[in-house]
Length: 410
Image 1 (cartoon, helix red, strand yellow):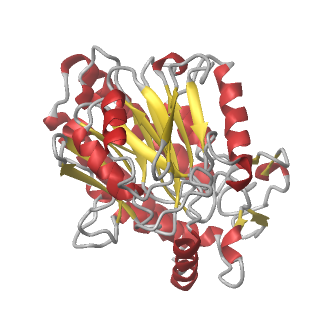
Image 2: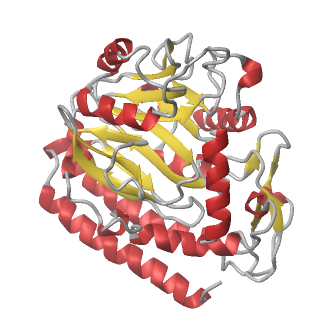
């Protein structure tokens, strides 16, 4: 990847605190399967992410961490064996005018602690009350549980406001969306309003078709190339002739951007189902060049090798995804990270990543769905997961090695 650009902008992100994520909390009433879902499209200066299974204070957990966090201190999204799941988006208006002299940016530490000891949304709220004034957090925390609970907690240094996705007044359609502002905060201080409007419109139109699904969020919402303000899709401007027909487009205020590092869609369970069947549909690389890798909380440490970090190194899938991403961002100077070359993604010769690589994740989804249904009925089977992961590692490796071999190196 472009290390000099990444390092410089990472420092900028750390100084300014601008981490523009897009997310949603979805109840079973709004999903096609009747199961709650949690979605986070993560933007961050830490482009290298990994999946880790760990033991919390009370529950075993699985979640996403930064690769450089070798001791796994800060969790950015994940689930536990009780069926409780958590994620966050940074909020830039929840603490407007509030003085705080202690450490800030403790959301990752906070979420790891909460995931390790909470089993339900109600327990999380109790935990949140007990921690008031102790953490430097400015976030919209999204949570779901195995009993059908689903909510956002817009949380500042001292206070929080709960928005229940099961409340018909707060969430008429059974879901809530958050970017980088809190509804309870000062409107002029927030960020991500354009991404919010675009995602809200996309969800609204999908609900008219019957409900939301993992496939919709994965393929349409998290890889959305339509602009919420200009009302124009990137693919409507110009369709490159082939892979070499470079065409640069600004990514300002799109859901996808250079700093999109990972995605997690948690598909929960119905109240009568085993919470260990909770499925984490993870994308641990740049969403436009990275395929999905399903993980089950009940699988414990039985994780695909392609998404694990060994000796502090990047998971193979992260390296492969970033290598392909280089073709999409050819310019390092100035604000090069704000402009994407669309030719490697889609073109008239059908040689783009979104035309060849990403569609092949359908085989992953189909195979995982079959296994998932077995887990809902009979419980999680470690042998089945091990067999699936062996297949998955081989399948993904062949996809990327073939793609990289055909393209060469940038």
